[in-house]
Length: 341
Image (cartoon, rainbow, N blue to C red; front, side, top):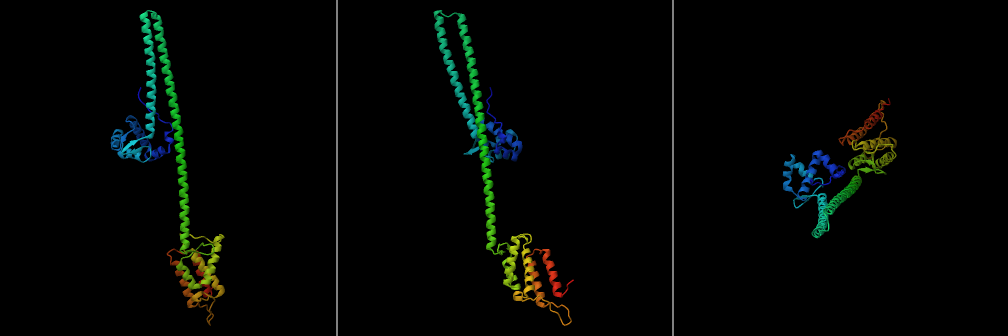
């Protein structure tokens, strides 16, 4: 009878095997079983230097065999010797079965020898005839068959128990790996949240976010320019108003694709405040009309400079301002020129 080892029917359900097949298809799966067969035939030992021999025998690339052996935790490598805990278990069970079989055979032969001595003594005394001797031999033959059958049943039972234990161990291993992967996913998610929180904290430390809800994006340079143009009090007021509108969903939150959008909104709100109060910070821009003796609207030079400076602030970031900024500029120019159409 040719030697064999058990091949689990749930092998391809193992996560390690699934990763192997995903990386190297069924060719990698075949190389795995070829290495397992080699380990069974060589007392669970394979030198790393012998990988090229395996590759040549299978007709595959050496790198494929190296990847199967090293990259999927299917084998153990110590002192440049490849082995498998599962193969070691199979070899151990095989030895135990062999020892049990040897003891059973020795026991049967010992009983046979004792009976033979008795027959010989009786034969010498001429107390047992030929028919009785034949009957005894037939009984021994039947006992031997029964013993062999009993041994086969016991071996079959042991093999079923072994397969059941292997399946239980395989399910436990899969469950453990699934739990580990879920834990890693949770840790990755927590790390992402932590980094986002740190990034948000850094932005606040850089003073790029203002307002009562810290949701108005404005760089320090832009804040200083607005304060010089319209006055710090007006700028702080319109920042608070915009922050409240963003928090209540009436205005858009910060968008990295349009980083100057909040600046444009603040420009618009500041001009509206100035139209009401009549002052504009250090520039002291008056948005009321200045009518010449001829009755034509003539914007002051300071007003034109203020509008030009506002456009430079918005467009200085290198990102096109939103359409609302241009529309607000057109309305302001019409108002300065006295065009109500």
